[in-house]
Length: 177
Image 1 (cartoon, rainbow, N blue to C red):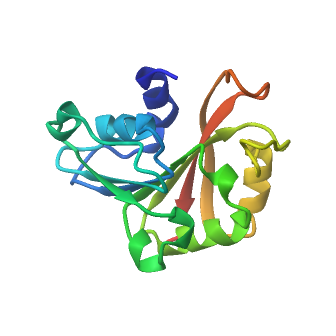
Image 2: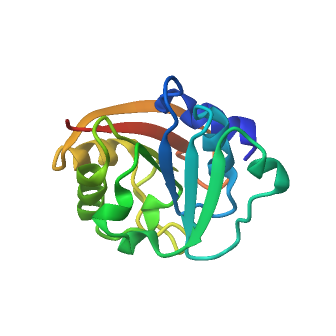
């Protein structure tokens, strides 16, 4: 996927007006969506990219931008609620690794700062495989969130996938105040 496509999938879910913000990218992988997020946040913001592996290392260009990118090697599913006290969380192709999605989403939404945002980018299918063990279509995500403290669920966009017939969607979830 190109950086421009990643930006298009998430940009309408980010409030880029006002003060600097703190965001987490849970399951950052190679950093594609971390870079996309950094590109659309207000100047002075910080994105912490968290992944089990250390496959993402910000480049010199990433570190010279208006948004700082930090990295952390950790299993995002074991983060404490205190670690999730941020303005926003991005989960791009990572929620499908979480078995207890309802419990995890509840923890995330309950932990975000007031007016916090969660952006989910996922394959639009419910059929798993060895690479995507717990996929969550947009329809299933919406149904699952009726059991959490989500206030608003908005489909932001979609793009074809080279791996899944259903494509890839992005969604914005706003936490209840």
